Length: 116
Image 1 (cartoon, one colour):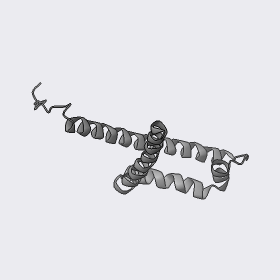
Image 2: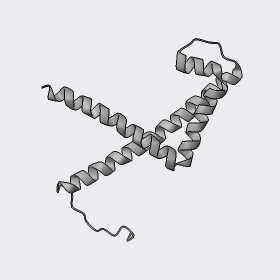
Image 3: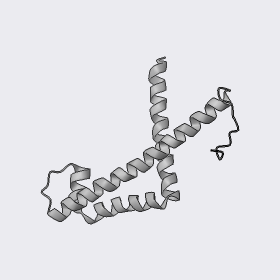
Image 4: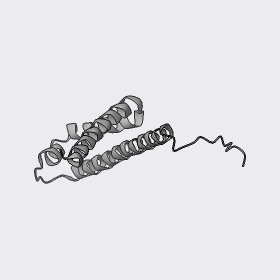
């Protein structure tokens, strides 16, 4: 049994499950994320040439307005990815904190940060 190969496969499977959970959660609970995701879909729905380039890897000439829409698409996709990565990072930090606390490596210290 190749433990490392099995561990890597399990980690990869879990990663995509977590990403799917997080994107679903964000879509249901974040208006900004939902609006951004819908805008990305709308851009592709309204621009067949962009869809052909981005989804079918076709080489096509674009008009100036299509190039502007492509730039908008890339910017919105980047914003969406940043929102997802931030949430994944925060979820990982929370998981690590509670894991370390649960196994006894962290102790809670009550510190009043309001006193400057």
